[in-house]
Length: 187
Image (cartoon, rainbow, N blue to C red; front, side, top):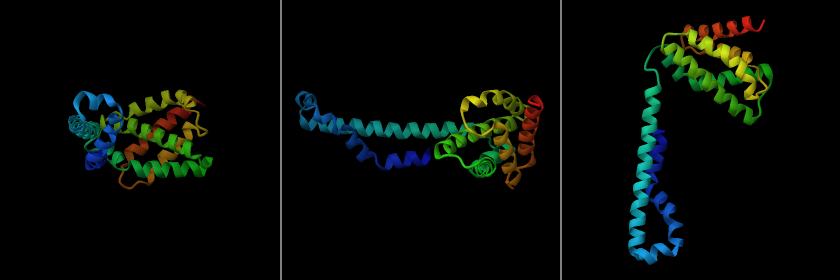
């Protein structure tokens, strides 16, 4: 979000001008305020709104940062998220066939969700929370309408975690425990 805020900020004037250009097509503004005042105040208001958008984007980034775990296994998983998603998708594709672009996008969202639950369980030092999530999510999984199995997703994630050198054994073991609990319930 920070880079998006900077990008918007760098284009403030152009965005402001573009946002009010349609306003001047309505003869009301020139008739009511005169063309010079309407353009000046309309432009100033538009710049103000773009600056407010930049601030809002910065607030969003601050909120995201507040949700990140500062240390430990949860932080390591957070820092490795992109690599873990990429590696998990690669393994899942190799095992169960390549996804369509839309399926790949949805699988990426799924993996980020699963990693979020994993990070929270690790960050609170309660890995059993992830296991309980897996048990519940297995019943919900069919609603996602993905051609891949939830078990297959967990297996691929477990393998990706094992290959990520920056991540300790605990995240992999937590996913493995969840997968094992799932297998016991459905056997």
